[in-house]
Image 1 (cartoon, rainbow, N blue to C red):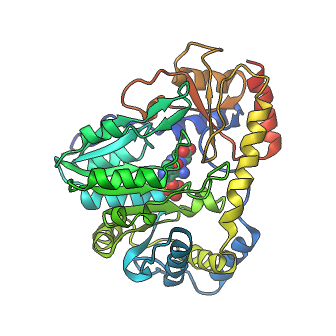
Image 2 (image 1 turned 180 degrees about the vertical axis):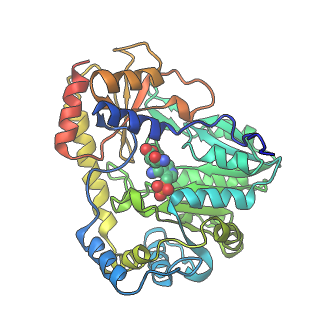
Image 3 (image 1 turned 135 degrees about the horizontal axis):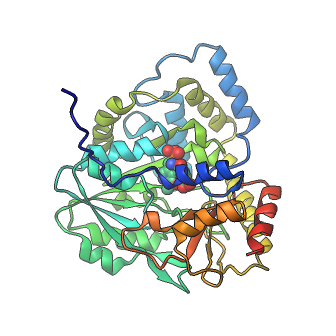
Length: 387
Ligand code: PMP
Ligand code: GLN
């Protein structure tokens, strides 16, 4: 007897990133939807991959990751965030940030537990929570200044916390709004969480893309929060290599041990030659990430400047490689419909924000990825200015 599928994720369709990238390809549109750069990874890094491919790094890496890569990450964590972490017991290499997020959620969330996310929330969180049997509690980020500045609604968070809150998921620098956290925010959070048995999962994949002279405040930098935190990041954004799908999770030893119980049966290990190449590259160029913010800030400024003559309203993004544009002066349509219509009509694909929110958003904003060469941005902006 062939059983009928009784879906564990009945409300999940194909991700909006796949849908919009496919539509862009079908229409021959400029794809500013799914977030990936149009630039290549550093040449030296590719050389090191070639080297390791030809020099025997083709079998399973150790389950937590190649030791040299974990050592480099430990040094970087100490340098950047002032936290001494042990490469053996506190760092695990994962298959992209996505697996780091998934394995953390499976490791700590049990049926009946509550997990808090801030809307708009990256789309991989809730399905992972649902598969673990948890309930997702959505708290919208508060909006200020005509809805362009997003920030944590601390009162709403405070009232949502309870003994049932097993996990709070943070994502700062925030995709898609560019919101960031300050050290004062982390202190406030530490105080608020004191009475609750709540872990933190901090998705920091855009840690090196923060603008206007501000730097990222990692959960790793806060002594009190660190004790309950899983900090996840990715090499994809930092090295223009989203297709490599290599990330990592940093957490105190007891949390890491539990993370690895799941990780070893999710993927067991991560692609070996690229781990070795990343270790070499981080050793040779430990400051590579320092140029990233200036690089993307120039892209952001170019894109915003090119759109000055348009009917969009905007405020330059504070972080990430995404710009939010408000289209209320152009159309009253819903964001998901409009993103598809404009892909077909003017040949520019974007991402609507409503799929990342539980409660209907006043749907007048779209997200555009500006991690593209100047010609592509110029062409896209020209089309957007015609609206
Ligand atoms: N979290 C956020 C907020 C992201 O934007 C992304 C995608 N870039 C990921 C996680 C997934 O990262 P990875 O591709 O390394 O799995
Ligand atoms: N993180 C990327 C974005 O926000 C997409 C990743 C994916 O396609 N799953 O656009």
